[in-house]
Image (cartoon, rainbow, N blue to C red; front, side, top):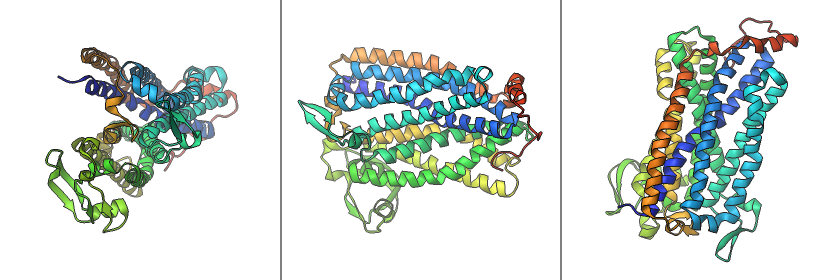
Length: 462
């Protein structure tokens, strides 16, 4: 029978996995809406307005589901993780409060204007609301990543009466891993949105290659994949080096290294065995592991055997989730490169292979984000606050049956509610984006003397 600690971990992992899907989408989608509305105001091209309305409906539903799933998570701190909340409340509590005050209030305050105010407040004020919502989503990522990064690399604190108390807010907020994790996550969110937009654009281009709205979506998304894909790989490498400095056990598990070695190989695939303390059936590239991690062919890589057994993360999970994340990252970069080649050959909108590739890659951003978070969180174990508090010390004295019951309830409710919501989003995506045009909103521009002088201005990014 599963004990209370493991059940509580499974429950939190389940709810946070559902939750992260929606913010990772809405962060990028809010910025995409900002760009679309800016292009509409600048070019007076009604196609951008149609795209804005098309994606705004999807954003609204995704945002709502993200809020609901986030509220559920916060309750678990009090029900299942009381000692953790008591120990870290002086640090984590204010950081989460800052997120609510500076980000959620900003989003909630302007979301209504963004969704319903275009015919009431005018284009420029409405654009301000869209801008504030986009900025709010980035602020939210800032504070949440700061809080989580503090749990990974705690800094700027002292221990008083058995509790962590902030001694320097600058050091606590901008802890050693925070800048790398923030950049990595925001880029991942933008890429996730780009892949979804690109998949939707590809879907409609496969049905009508003259669909101008689909062309705009696909072109903008492929530019994002081409530019941010390689940048994300570089940012991930810097993040990995930071993790090697502060959490070497996690990196050892990610790389599948049990022995400390100089000139360590890069293990492409294998089966880490915690009991036998070896990675079986390893497919290796000599010395490349040291070169990537230390930038030296004979650099020293610490293995898991250098850490006490009780301080080692679960290597099989961390090893494989890391490879899923990296593998998808490489495929995303390849999609971007393929789109550049097709663009140079003037076949961006007619290449069926590229469209099918983009459609297949549509959900890959979500999968990569989930794999990356599993790598990060499982790799931190057995610590809930790295080096300060073990996960076994963080749980509340709750009966396993109570946690199991609530976990089952979460699974059932989430399957129904979020299943219906996701189905609605998918149905909205397959509708022709040109049908989202609302003539009354065009009249606002015309009334202001801003009527377009060109029937079909060039596609953005061409």
